[in-house]
Image (cartoon, rainbow, N blue to C red; front, side, top):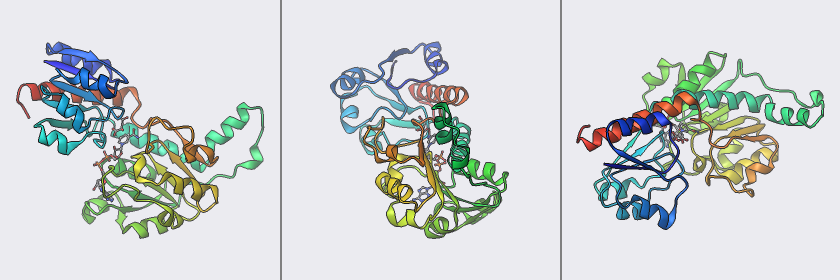
Length: 305
Ligand code: NAD
Ligand code: MLT
């Protein structure tokens, strides 16, 4: 079988496919006609977040059995079109959870202590010790929007550093939330009580622009961490809220449009710190998701679950 890989994945995953006697073709950064041509005779397609797998792609890929997503979010894959064309979509739901949760915690400290801003000024030769008075997380309240795999890990980590937990997630039980010490509340309650709000929902019709001007105003003086998906937070509203001092700061790893265009309003606000979708970018996580995805592609070729 032929497997087309259109976003870079760890070699361990590619080796897994070759060891199972499948042909692997890598074609990174292809889009439009080039992608449609490349996928025409592929039996498997492996992507990360960089490739948009649209209805057009499914229509062009007549031999396709499975799309493997080497990561969690499947918002770049048209699931309805996959279903219409009888193609399996499989993600790797666990392999990068630790990496994403560690990055979220790192971003929390980075924004609450202005580490990137202070770093840059010192590198520029400026000793700006007097300009930064940070916020301690101990004794503060963490609001978690989306208490799934990553949200729970972030909650556990920051609770061990002395934070109280509130969470908004209409799909998990009170008992499960209590097991990790979080009080389930509605979205307004989460925003109003959180000193630091961390977002861990998938991007769906329901979560698109979940947090805009009105919601961010309720996070008065607080910090927001978004290592989930760009479209969940209204970027212009977030830039405004931080710039106008409604919020203390924000740390953002994911964007509505990636790569981010230079005129994205978040890039202009000093107290919004940014990373280029690095949440899952650790060696261990990339190996985990590549191997898990390759195994699922091979299983699908054998008609296995
Ligand atoms: P998950 O499916 O385990 O958890 C998502 C949680 O969100 C679930 O508990 C679900 O009930 C909840 N949810 C769904 N809709 C909701 C809504 N409308 N309001 C509130 N809660 C809602 O997913 P996960 O593995 O924890 O991943 C979370 C997010 O992080 C996803 O968007 C994923 O794509 C993203 N992610 C990003 C990176 C990165 O590199 N930055 C890495 C891994 C995951
Ligand atoms: C994910 O949803 O797993 C993340 O977007 C990680 C990634 O593939 O970069």
